[in-house]
Image (cartoon, rainbow, N blue to C red; front, side):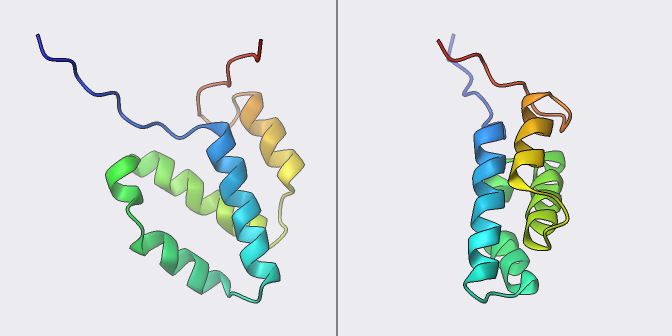
Length: 91
């Protein structure tokens, strides 16, 4: 029986990294429209499902506009409040 490849799922580390990148791009002078357009032109649709892409768009937008902090995003994600799997405890 052939192995079925696991679907790449969005994880907290990736969400936090996307938020950090959005803040850096904002600080470097890029507009939110340009950041969102770059997201649309990326290959996310091949890696993530629609729900994950929508969540990533929201996180990027809220980070870019300082509507929420990286700390708040990390706390929410680690608590399982973003609908992503909770990170496994580090051993």
